[in-house]
Length: 455
Image (cartoon, rainbow, N blue to C red; front, side, top):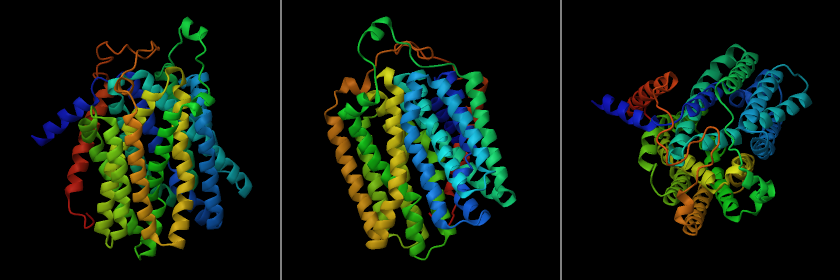
């Protein structure tokens, strides 16, 4: 009976979304399944190539810097060239640069190509989010963004495990496999996804409503969201930069950290869909306030952790915040974005996370070295509180109709809001997704209940 109920819940969660969304979802999943380079880049440079940890850190920073720059560039391309051409250019370039990274030998060349990989791989994100907003009805967007986030984490969890086995055989094979799977994503986009950028009417073209990066920067309310997003991202980044350092200083092994952080991936895969059903039609302002507080105080509780079980418990708290925050915040960005500027707005939002990925390691390193890990976790609690207050103040000033309503745009893949469901979920690929998602959720939930010694 529980299995039947779980299948019904999953079917209801994925029904009513257009076929184009599922092809985009499939492209995202395939892309994350092949995300090997980010997982073993440091090991590749230090163990296989024999470079120092400082050099590996420099290469990682250049990779991140490329992502920061391309966030805005990818957004501009998505608006000017279109979503589909941007995805094709970004994914094809990523495939070439990743393959090249496996062959270059000179340290300067490695650093340069790593920067190129970061730039090309990140350039597709604004286009993906803008296309998703184009093809999914406003009332279904939180659910669509949540399903996409679920695919990202499912793919990354599998690729992280696979990267270890592949690295033992050949690092070059890992680079080539990622290049091949990224190229497969480009092929899916080319064959299955039409352009979704809404066409502007003659009246709109005649008016002075062109959206540039200056327009985005001058949008004070949206830049407030970007700033709050940066604060929240700064907290979440500590799971991969501050937490392992703090656990190491406390005498825990890398395997202990791996066990604790694995809870994050398991919970996202198991809970993303049911939690989305719970939050889908709730007030986004309250959800963002609650998720910010959960993130801040979830990491804040780490100051009191003295065992693997308690560390895993704190991971559970901030993972719940992540599950709620990701689709809600992305949906808010879409609601605040003018239709003709979705790419640029998504690019600016993506950049907030890229900048946080650069700042977080510096912040955690300085705080832990000078004052200790307890101060880092206390600072996370303060930042989470500040973000929660910020979202509360921002959403109070937002008229309700502006936060929930959007007129139809008439784009090639977008239907008017008042029309019935765009596509049936009866397409072959969607049926497969439903069955796979249901089985995965039920199986992972059962595994999570099994005693592991850490929860």
